[in-house]
Image 1 (cartoon, rainbow, N blue to C red):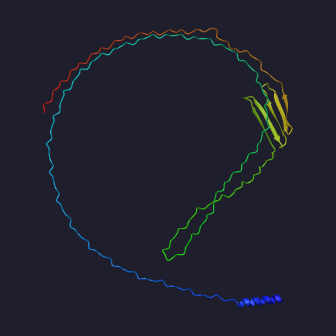
Image 2 (image 1 turned 90 degrees about the vertical axis):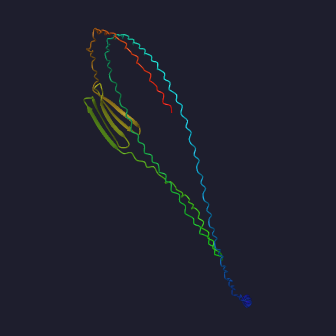
Length: 306
């Protein structure tokens, strides 16, 4: 209780010792104004001076009589051209030599017949490779938010205000970070299939067929072909996880054609053709007569004196 009484006494004493601040009104000093002084400008009348005129001086041109020098004339010299008769040489002619062609009797070689070899076709199961897919790369454009700096403005002083153009800085752009999406490769399960075809062409002696089917785990099939020896080959095969197995069978008996000797006989003798060399007569040649042209030197008359 005593504590609260002491605090109350201190509060009352502090309230009595507080003085309110004094406020003084601001003093205003009116600016002094001086009327401007005006001085009347002084004007001076311009001075004018009349221009001086001087009569031009004329000098008569001097004329000199031209001097004439008569040209010197020399009579041209003429030389009579020398003429030489052309020399003519008669061409030399050589009689062509004829060589009779040699003829050789052709040799006949009987054709050899070889039985055709047949090889069983090898079958390989088709390999399937899943297509590779590459995720396209995307590069996002770089963009930077523009930064703007507000212009600085200063309160005008009782002077001509100065204005400073605002400073502008080019905007800075930060490239956003791009993460490539993750791609999971899609795998496709094997699908069942089946096919078959048959080819028969009597003109080319072609006769075969092929059938195959699969349940996406086991591949089975067979093919049949007629061999050149008239037998029929039948192959039944199976392909699974354990590998490829085939069963080959033949139907019929092999037949081969008998050899028949050719009926062609070479000619017994051959008579070479008779050839006569052509007779050639040497042409008669007469050299042409040449007459030298008559030439008269031109008469020259000296020009009259000038």
